Length: 351
Image (cartoon, rainbow, N blue to C red; front, side, top):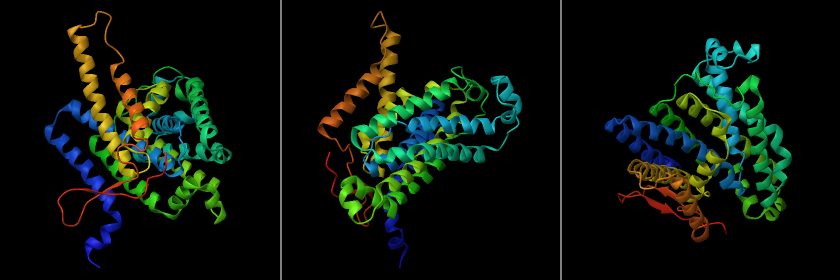
């Protein structure tokens, strides 16, 4: 068996990784600090969106709580990575046993992801029985609960005040490595037995149950894996931004992440990548227009919210005219002979 045949099952993730590598290399060659910052955040967002796709794309259940687990991972990771002096300076009421904790960057990230996954495992199992509107409302309620806990648990999160003093460990290449690993992990999950069984419950849970597939367990495992990825992504984001509040992990960020996945296409890994790239580029262009209008003072009262409004309109149009997003269920694949990417086109689930 030649190398091409062995790599064929990994055609899609290799194609997606090649695309993000091109973006990273071009960003490094240009050497513009603002562009480097934008692309670094984009790679972290890509990781979070992929985590959402792992659960939402395979189960068909919208998950509002995803950003809440990102917040859990962020706060956990920084509490392990910050020095004792920095912790005391930023939160004098922090529990004494937390003040003494100090680990390197990578273990802190993994612990943040594990804590997020543990919280998801403990609270989500009964919720996996729900479908349709009940499931959506429940995950939104879960997001509210996580936000309230982060907002008022002063002795851990510093409450509504800004948590500062976090070391900047997340670079362009660090975020790229984690994004690449996540692309492979999410795609392999999709093609695994659990992923196939989970999609079977999405398409027809009665038929899936008739052949012995446990819908609750399949959803539960995917929800835990999704929370772990969100938690690690939150830790990466926190170590890049270096100061944040619980409001950073609430409705505004939830809307952006959902827009990235829905616009790109929630039913494919390629959709998550394309959606993240497209929405990030669109946001920056719209922000540039908004800032330029404000600089020129074309509106006496200011010109604010333009970016969010346009993204919301685009999201509505996508849901109306293309409910499965730009990619639908298709995955980007690199053909053997032709010099451009082609699309594998499995049957798309009904909207």
